[in-house]
Image (cartoon, each protein chain N blue to C red):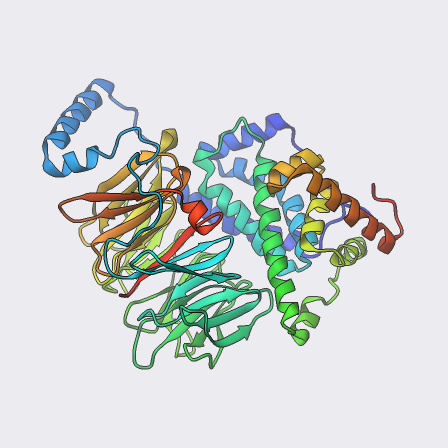
Length: 177
Length: 368
């Protein structure tokens, strides 16, 4: 993982026209951006769209980006908010009774069984609860930072974390706190 | 269980996305600038400023190129629109239809809305459904789509009227305006809204590999495809004679046969084409925290500044008669109605977020 100094150098390089600096920045941040989106939306195509569009937004705004600020929170704010919107849209469809399509959307993902377990456990939670848990435990933000990223009161973040983790713990049988 | 395990498809999605991101980046890289010859540059700049100030258009424009962060004499709300038509606005609350007299109706829960050619209907997304609705909210048909449809846009050709293109996942799909014959048109697309050529059922799309495809959606395959720098927006001029590939640092102008006519040496963060002619408004973010909106004559390749200010500008939309441009001055929480012809006029409206809800966005200005 790159240090804050590496990241500032990559951003400076990318702003100056270095594709290799941008690639270093992309490859450093892609796994967490994609995983965060995936764990909120539980759909590989949706996660790819969300993470990709966040990076495209970064490219569009690269010249205006203040390189003294960390890049991760800026990117993660876009990813998680878009993922919440996406997941809400799917929830709304479930409410209008689109059962066959929902069955397709909820098909178990292939590949990593751990990711499968975690995703299945998170699936029982609302998108908002999933988001704060992903921000806390995957991206390792503090509750205060999560509150700032999502524009929520810190008390709301804490209560969502507490409720979400209780439920996740019941389902997975592991202590996540 | 570990939070550090890769998610399904993570690596392959990363490779695909890197290609898209790199294309977008290469498009935005500014050309290297020659070392400035300061005394000459300063003299030329001084002469240009004097000439601009002394010309009538210059006086009109430079009056607005101050370090203003908002218009001080803005109206407190949208009391009326300066010309005929209805505005479509999106916010966190949903979609708003604003009548010329300033009255407005909220269609809650909708987003990604667009006008039908004559303004009788809207195509909009509600949850995971694409819906055709009347401006009063009456639903005509709905279509569920896995993952949620996005950015539906209407063709304006008739007869037969009409077609609606929309994105679903990474595909671009097309459905008839009456809700029949939903079909995939292109399957592996970049996140760029497709563009209808005015007066036709020809659709321009950009693939994830940067290939622009152009064809009549009532036929099986596109008639034309060619590589383009990855754009953030595709537009046809209002007269249907130019296809504009809008990137962050340049705008490619193409003929309907795919011939590159004239690249414009600047890009933007948003763009809007005037109805029925060849004008383009480009919203640009400049160094030093400034923004400007520039009017481009796409036939001649010339442009001029219409308005400039401090902070961030958002979307813009032309009035149906092509005489006004509404511009979102996001950082000032204002809209500006800018008359593009002489005599210049600016009408500012404040408190936009309070009027419409968070993150308001101008989605269109349609028919009387």
